[in-house]
Length: 384
Ligand code: PLP
Image 1 (cartoon, protein in one colour):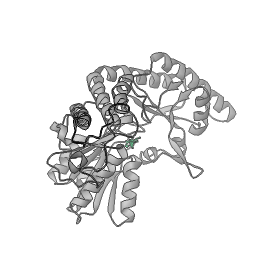
Image 2 (cartoon, protein in one colour):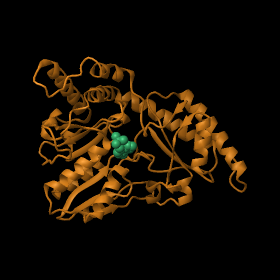
Image 3 (cartoon, protein in one colour):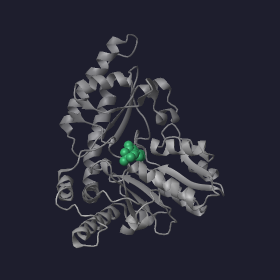
């Protein structure tokens, strides 16, 4: 198998698995317990908190562990809405992950007003549109740091600064950015940041939310006093320890991983452009995370090519999703102005540190053959 879908999820790093196993076996104490068997686990959680804080440049006390990126996103929005209930306006963009979009849509149905910022053809927002959209009753601005489909990086530090000046809470969904680009929250005006373990070689079902120490906060899960009363529920101890280790590894290797993964991505992209006629790259090629390329391949139905690639052992993603039996073109690509047809002809390849150049070369051959085969079956389109 050639796994080029690291934005969907990543493999668990063997060193990460190793540190979490004791917490699934002998170290099963409850971190809230008063005896040392529990306190040992509590100490392991605090170490993990330090490791995650170090990766994003904040204080350990500003890290709150959650069950996933989606929960972190939901928590940030709900906190802002609970803190000041007179503010009923939310600003976000048209290209967010469904963890924000579906939530904002649900809030709109409950009487909140949502401003959806546009993106240009490269997938970039316009900060002057953001500035103009902020109102006295804006509860929160939520913008993703890196787009999961195109990899495009929004100017998040600048957006956060605009919000600070207008005294508006700013949240960023950094699920696809953390571990891929250097982040130093101490130097920014960001109040909330979401991250997720399974995008950085930790297991699925664990995430974190950065809550700036000066930000007012209201919990999403109300229950026991865990996480300094900020999230009720007994902690997922093994996965939190794993997330800490994964954060440590990501931080230690961020530069070399950037170089290595970028070379895989750039080689794949350049070769696809050269070998296959009718290929275009979607999104800003400069301002994006190093591991992602999103390609439109003229005349190709992404669902069809995905099946061929799957048969050949290549995993990647389509720019469309099958919902209720119909192919829905990607909302991200549509917001960038691509036609339904172009969006349905798109594939996302996302690379990771476990990939190799040999896999890139093999996948290119498989992709070139698959495109040729599909085009031969559909007369009138470009021959590969
Ligand atoms: N936000 C972005 C940008 C994502 O890519 C994802 C996952 O694909 C999420 C949020 C949701 O994260 P999780 O799967 O941990 O809930």
